[in-house]
Length: 308
Image 1 (cartoon, one colour):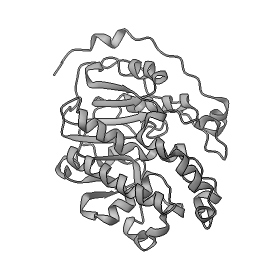
Image 2 (image 1 turned 180 degrees about the vertical axis):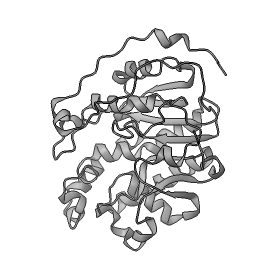
Image 3 (image 1 turned 30 degrees about the vertical axis):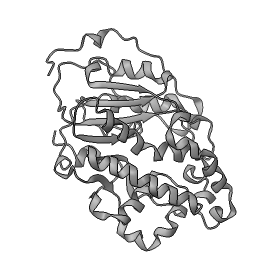
């Protein structure tokens, strides 16, 4: 453990970010963003790895009140980047200066992976996703499509959401920090709200003892409530197994990625496409023992899983 501040803490320049006018009108930013000071001496727990990613899928130009610019997501990401943890960040080159600046003082606890959206394994399904979304059978009775939700109208959105297991699997394989437990946390978790530990220290609870399972937050009324409707979940506007956070040991993470690929093959064969949260529910129905579901809501990650 390095008990001194990282020398890089004073070297990086502050990248200038601006929030688009549309994001300001829509309220997609916070006036009270995280402090931008460098890290001091190490005080966290470093036996696990947090994985996240941020790629630009053009959401800044979306309509139907779903637009959020890339810089807005970087601003959201400030709070997450202040976590005093081992962190793997998959990001496009244009986002790297901001990541480097926010993580100054923790460069030894940070691994940034340059990646492009088109290089993601699931990008090869982009045209199939689009064709399914345009089919009449998919549109029929689809609450998500009729309300213009991204899950049913944007192939790019579903590709990036379904890629979370890919990012986790790759982090397990390369294991940059030699840990056995891995946590996914959305880059924009909290959307600028004050839901992260103020000092950045995360001392996990109710996670490591379930390392052979995937731990997720389960929102009411629970996954079992919808099991009888599982064949049409991809047309229902529900969010039960929250995809913004999950954790597990390396072995179960890799097994989940393998099973997701098998389920995705089934989806494409039957004209189904949706985001990660429906995927998690389908995998849960196939093997409930693989999951450790904890009752909670979107903003409860550090209430449920932090002892600090």
